[in-house]
Length: 196
Image (tube, rainbow, N blue to C red; front, side):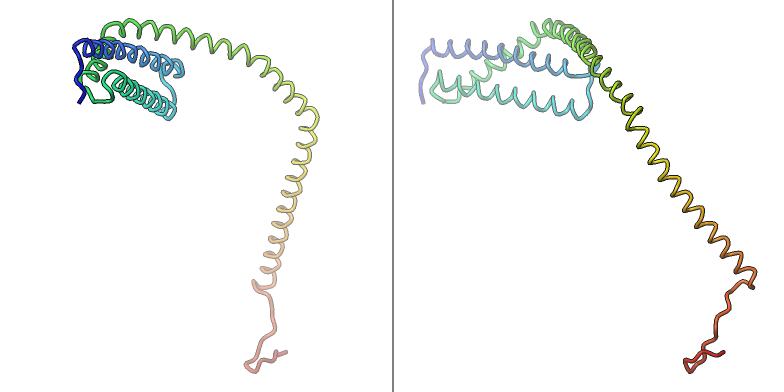
């Protein structure tokens, strides 16, 4: 086990604390982007879960990676609990003091960014909508009319065929009723010959 001097321990605690504050700022940045990409403070359930999972997963990986790298840099890779406690203290101190102020500012900034993005998307979509409406009008005036007439004639023929089949079935039923309700057929004898 590597014994650390008092100055190395002090350096470890201070650097862990500053690293924790930095990680708190990074976490607030993740929260800021999550807030921007939600709709009216909410998003679709699946998208919100995926975004939250990914951001928290990336933050946890970043937290673990920086803690391990700091442990290797100062104490030669030996686990020092004081390092992780310093990081945790830095994150919590930032979150409950300066983090409250930055959260309010980031929410207002995110609302402003969201409104700005909506206005830009609306401005960009105006010419696109105009182009699509022009294409649709041209389609309905040219090819759409031809296709509509073809579909109408196909449906008309289908309805006519169904009507003729129904008429033939009704005539067949009427002729069966006139002939006594059944058709006369030749009788078959037990010997297999038809009786006349």
